[in-house]
Amino acid sequence: MKTLNGKLYFEKKDIDELKKKAIFLVHNPTDEYDQLYSFDKEEMETVIEGITALNNSLFWEFTSETALNLEKIKIIHQTLAVYHTNKITKDEFVKIPLEQITSYCVKKYENWLKSIGHDLFLGVFVKYKA
Image (tube, rainbow, N blue to C red; front, side, top):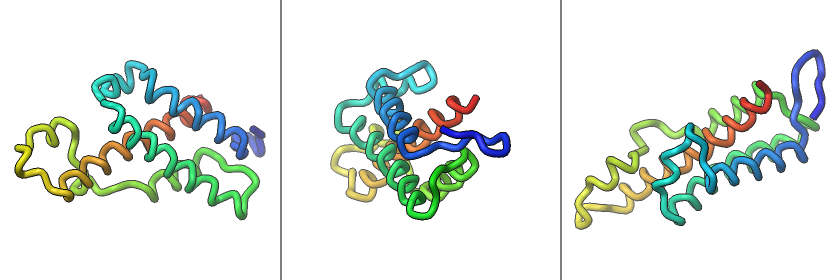
């Protein structure tokens, strides 16, 4: 990490380390992410896919940048955001009768799980800066 003009900038190696912390949090959640305790292996893997998606987007920026500040990371995080209408929570998903579950329902649930991964990874950056 480096500080320029009073702002903290994250380099590739920093992002790699923070990604590891985020994945660790998926398997060892804090009170902030206690809902992860109720997730099965597949659901956790989908949350990790969300972390990986944000990581990949951040690394794409390194084609033109040598480091990223938190504001840029938040902008990149926002580009991955899925509209609320394209997500359903676990509580909503389990209420759907099995015979009525469609691939669209599953996709909306996966979107929600991935967004948890995006938010969790961003949270690691925010807390690191604090």
